Image (cartoon, rainbow, N blue to C red; front, side, top):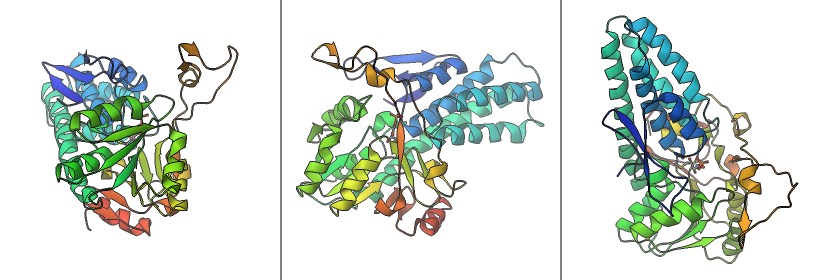
Length: 349
Ligand code: MRU
């Protein structure tokens, strides 16, 4: 089953907030509810939220009562702004919405409102189908970097749940496993929302890939002890110079990997590469509700004192000097990334 899919005129999404305890698929009929689902992290992971927003735009088309193509286009534009505002860091969100809007805008003078509604849905479906195919291509390039017997550290969740299907960094690990390579995965639990301990572990369990969950602050221990051969992570936005924004904690992992000479590979579809940003300091970083940090319980009790305050930064930026190579669907980019990434984005390896 896909993480995000269209069925019976509804957008359906696996509710990632309650996994692995419960498996539920929620149905959406309105774009505002989809935007809320992205903010609340019913759906999460850069490619998955891109696909959800694209289908959200299709819902906006059907919600609009407009008869003329020009007023439908205006309604779609308003919905685009709502969807794009749902989360700031993953560029796939704006990329997907802009891609679907471009189709609607380019034909609006010649087509009826109903034809445009259908074209918007078709484009969203195409984008979702392509995501699966792109992940599988990326996985082949990335799996070639994995040797039989490797132990890999993985951060956050980058699997089928973070995409439409298959996954980015976890997709690489899954493909290497299917190729018969024996791999062991150290799963960073990924505070505060525990995407690693909840979602990545749940996925690895189903793929039959051996793993152990480690607290985020354990990665340095195993890297220094020589127990890890590679790190694979995802990205929410990668700048033109190869600076990589990803789930908070990725930077510390990259530092420890670099210090111990362990290769560090972000796995990044070209839709996540933002060539308009020269470097990673320009990437907008989401700060979420402190409650996600403060609400943590230990042995049934809230950890923090009653009046404690917290900061909840959702992403950090790993500078390109710590990055060994960036795996894309068009091949692996190596430093200097300014040139190599641009070539791969333009599919000119
Ligand atoms: O806050 P999340 O869970 O949406 O963060 C997800 C990540 O950081 C992933 O590593 C990233 O989206 C890329 S993997 C598809």
